Image 1 (cartoon, one colour):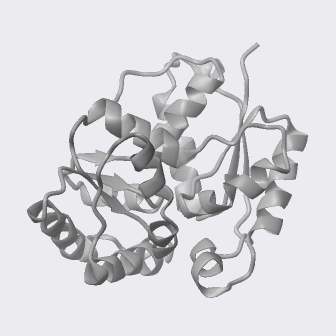
Image 2: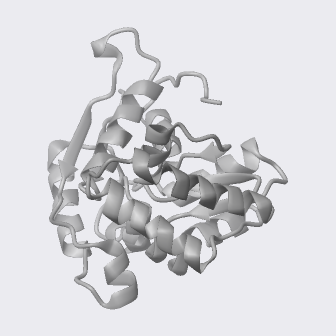
Length: 237
């Protein structure tokens, strides 16, 4: 019997919609009935994860757990979270459920090793994800070296994530700032870019950027499709 997906969403809403869209796009389906049953709890009341990790902000786990309970009640067979920073709290959530929560960072690191052997990725993510070392540890387990943006580049990234994408502002005006970050990292030796905040695939897609990129949102979608026993479309380039 094929399985179902529960999306623990709302972190943020556009990233949640992006993940659902990618599940649909990556499923090998000829008609509506060939697609996976997906339950979505878009809980926008979940407190900011970076603020909780770095600045003593409100603990997001109670609201995340509330969404998880709704997804359990719906009948989800696995849980996925369209927020990289939220994975800092994954061990606490996993301890509260028997459902598997698929790990976005581990999936991404494996894809990086398989698809780009010997290459150095630059990790583009929130301050919370960078300083918590979520991707660093996952990449290290796969034997991969990595790069981070410098302080100025990281500040610009946070502006793009919070003040542009999360704030639903026009993205075209920030194209130059985004491309400058990519060019600077390439000049320092980055071979590819991990879009390690779920707002960044939204930004990159809107600006038609060239990478190469690894999109953790897409790789999470593909892993969830496989978990549920459905066929994937051919990998994207």
